[in-house]
Image (cartoon, rainbow, N blue to C red; front, side):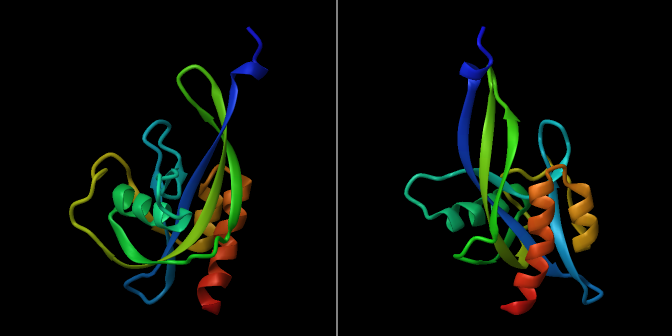
Length: 146
């Protein structure tokens, strides 16, 4: 079997959720993946008929119950290899800043993932993809400038 023929590309959208914690410090909220349990941001496939930033906003709500204001302009992109049923897919994720104002008590994937607030540095250290790590650090400046 030709491995190259088994590679397919996919596009996804994601949100870097930022909030002010109970001590008044900025925090990034990460979720675990359902498969490997690694820390990441809320993300998923594009939703037909919606702009990318709205898809990212919905992913944050479904995966972590996060509610807030999403930026329309992306922070950037990162890529990762995603294992699918019969092949690997190179996922290109467009990432947006989400200013979190609340967390819903009930949401679609409640109980399926761990959700935790991190400092920007700790969040950047706990994600697997170097491109995502860089975007998390970039999100701090974007949050403070707006």
